[in-house]
Image 1 (cartoon, chains in turn brown, red):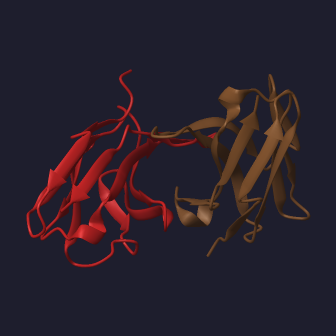
Image 2 (cartoon, each protein chain N blue to C red):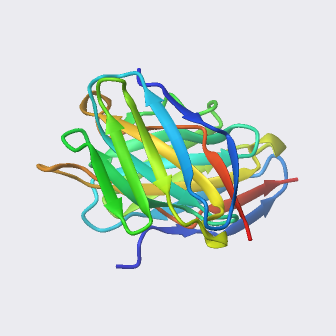
Length: 113
Length: 116
């Protein structure tokens, strides 16, 4: 089955710096890659996603890139703010898994003011 | 849309008691997922349904856990008998699949279960 590895497990940056979280996946048939943000004590929420026919997608300060050949995708957050502090999960989904996403283990991002 | 609705938000129960968690997915979503989250094990998929039919229950820890989805707007996760190691936050999530492809999950607010 699909396996998703996420790095780093923890990341600390100064406010205003950029943050990058990377994920690799094993199933070349995976075609949908969402990212979720989970603030302390709250639910995971979808913040951005990318499909396999697209190499990059941006939404204000966040962007996601996908390299299908290398089977990895990354989340980029620019001009980080304290409210970006949260746990971020990547996920991969393939048609063969019939709707089930495989999640990474999460990255705890801390933005220091 | 009120989103995915879970109840109760918090549940404290004694070991050995039956616990029932409830979930109402977003109307029109055809997938429903039950996850458990702990610090030690992270986010674990317990079971998921497609059009009310259980597709994969391999994540259900043991026979003490059961889940049902009697209709498109309601699902339950039951633990009987409950044990202290079942203490966790249980999330329900729903999602939609269209011709254009899959879409991300919408999670409920979760149920924080404490078994003493």
